[in-house]
Image (cartoon, rainbow, N blue to C red; front, side, top):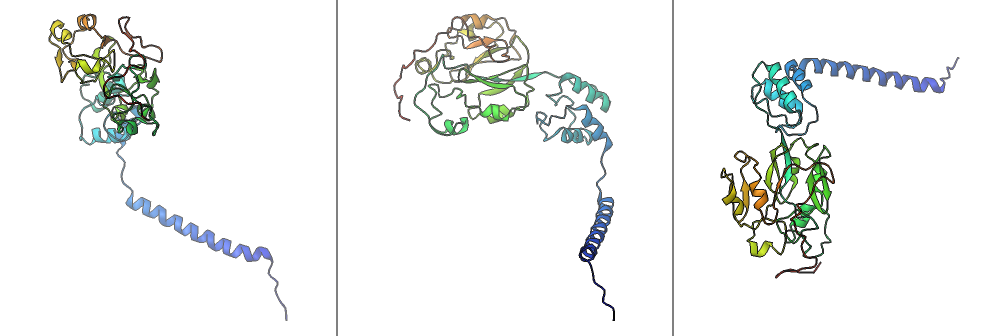
Length: 302
């Protein structure tokens, strides 16, 4: 009687072959299912997506560049000017591909409607909570003496994918050279201090968001709008209106004559966009706020 002795490799080989066979069978099944249930891809959307910058910033209102391309191809939207990151060249390329006339593209940039930096404001109390604007705003609107002002903790920086936001002198500023107007910083600011404006160097803006009367704001920020209405009376084209103690310039009417800038007693109105760090310059007429000066109702408690 003969006995066959199996080697160790024989004991491993059999289950290995069985496992490989199962894997092969499952692979074939997956391929069959993929072929049967595959969703056809619209080649037009894929080609149109290649014309877009591919940064998926959301500035067009869609989750991705492909989503915008699909919406255009499917006719869900007809505006070819929605890609803020791509600019005018992309708008023209989209229109050419779709065989339509290109729309009018107006470049935009985000702008922080506050210039109350450390030089022109002070702290009301010592804040020791979470280092983000959203949390600090929930505590008496934050430690800044101007309750409407920027807290400079960088919530806007955290959401910017284009290195267009930075903190300087305790306040957020937008580098208009890098900004693509995606709008993420606009949504991130808990005080709604950031807005999109036309991207032109002659921009004339009341860079303030404070609605307190002059008797209150003068001790909180020395560079804020004090609702004196001198700019309203001076504007030759009626582009400036008052909104609850705050002067607001209608950018569609403004001719950038500069009369309002010259007459503003607190230099709350400025001209020109801001660029990289170090490019912002306060007016020579701007007066720093007295350090340590407290107003009625201020507290030093942390």
